Amino acid sequence: MRLSVVLYSLINFVLCQTRTNGFLEVRSNPLVLSRRAINFDQLNKPLQPINISKNYVKRTDCRASLGDYSAAAQGLFGNVIGPASMLAGGLVPLGFLAQPIPAKTKREKKLRCIYMFLSVISLSCDLLSIIYATVARNKLIETPAIPAASAFALIKRDYELSWLGTNLNFMIALFGSLLMVMIRAFTIFPVPLKAPSAGIVGSVILLSMSIINRGVTKGDGQGNNFGGSIFNLFGRYVYLLANNIPSRGSMEVGALIMGSVSVGLCIKALLTPEPDEE
Image (cartoon, rainbow, N blue to C red; front, side, top):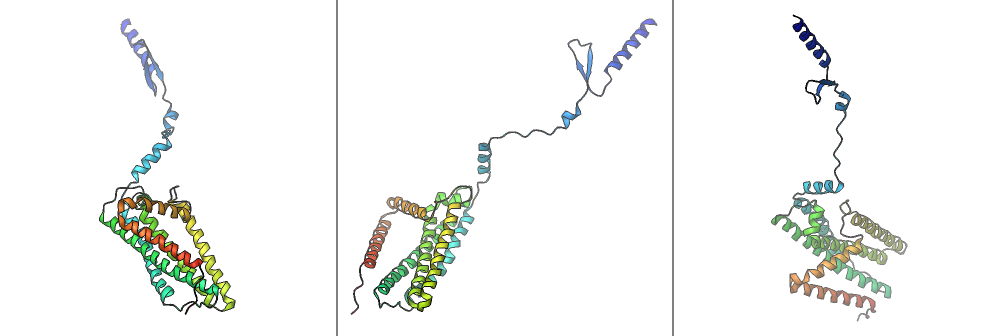
């Protein structure tokens, strides 16, 4: 009887010592048990974010954004074809069908020669811009494009020469047509309107160049561009054109030689006095 009472007391003592809302922690002695309460404040703390390096994030974003941007690139080339076609339709009457510029004085003769030169080079460059854009757009439809990070990256990788040729030749045609309007206004308009009208066209030319330079510098908005200004684009275009000559054949070589000689002869004609008409 006494033994059972001792055992019963011992069991009650152990149960009272181990009853808790926490864990039972076993010590080195398996017969000794201790209690430790759960700290619910530690469990409720938010998880700390994993520290990932910036380079890893950039590489992951770049790979995740790769895709087929050929349709977007087609749209960019198509944005130039429409305006260039309309400009070509206006250059024909402006340069070849309109009333001739008077050439009574020496200055008027010079301006007439410049006007004729601008009419030829503007129309030629405009048509060349349309050809560049049309061929590039057809190639984007006919050939599967390698995945790229953006339409800008696709054009810069596979169609840089076509893109520069499209835009630069269109800009030459556009500025040439504005200069033609300036010359025509300065020579045909009444005397009180000659200088103001020519000045308005000149301001539009300067503002247009500023807008284009701003767009060229911005590029794709992520630090990538084709050049820092219009003049950088011209240098890049000439560089790419010269590098493509060995792989393209004799037709481009003949085109460059003929174009360079023709421009040189036109400049020489502009610098020499015009002979009197018979």
